[in-house]
View 1 (cartoon, one colour):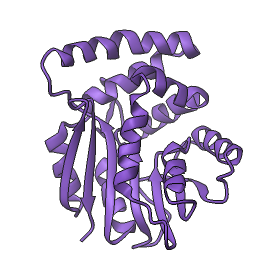
View 2 (spheres, rainbow, N blue to C red; view 1 turned 90 degrees about the vertical axis):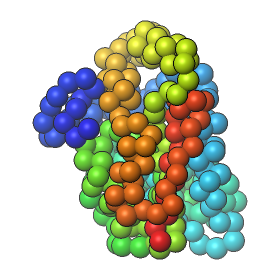
View 3 (cartoon, one colour; view 1 turned 120 degrees about the horizontal axis):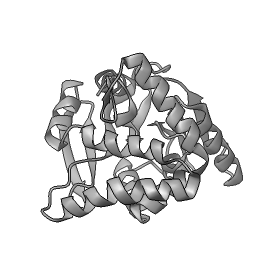
View 4 (cartoon, rainbow, N blue to C red; view 1 turned 180 degrees about the vertical axis):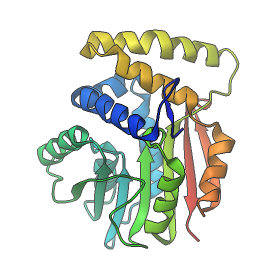
Length: 247
């Protein structure tokens, strides 16, 4: 993945530049487009991941949400913890973070959610810092995924959990053909009508197709050091939740 930009081959440096440009262009309507292109189902998938995160309601608990600029995962974690949890949202894209900051302030959660601009491949945190590491629909946009996974392992406390929600390979006949048509024909058209930005979502769809299948990515998580790694397909593998533990 480190030299693929959708269906094109680029250098690692070029990939990060292109991806930054994509997210600068979609930031203001990113959450709206998620609703439109998933028919709102992404909210259910994210709620399942937050439930598995199981933020504590009784003691100081801190998690890291990577590539979560607009804050939706972080806000759910804080709310599920009865405002006990503290979440750091890390994103490399400043436009996405600005949207998240505004939403946090509007929702009265700016005292519980903190925003940091940094690279997931080199996290600015000490070893054994976090009670959970989450990343939703963002890991496929990181050029060196292997480094990001190793960093996730490093900053988690022993006995704590890694959770990754990502689009994956559909594992149902007929549905895979319907999903293919929806992805390559309907979603770019929605993006054009909503924000006059077809090209950015063409890349995002292509990046899903280039992402490893469930078993291959599970093995990558294990190679980073995690134990008891499993995955759960949602909607026949349109999305997949991966979990692993730092033992």
